[in-house]
Image 1: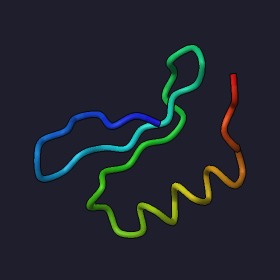
Image 2: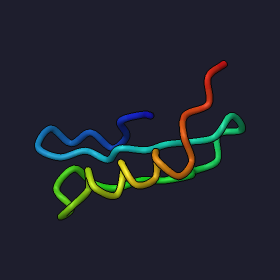
Image 3: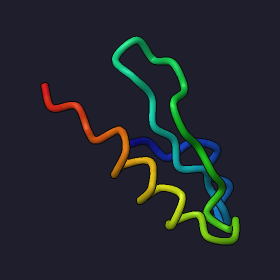
Image 4: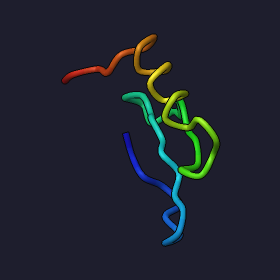
Length: 49
């Protein structure tokens, strides 16, 4: 998980795969952003290397 486009007052949470391809993203101010993130993590999990 990365923080991208940090603009001080808002930022975007991003998940990329091992090849750097975008898998999921949302802005911190989006409604239910955490709910979407939890849903993604529950279905896809986190790859441990």
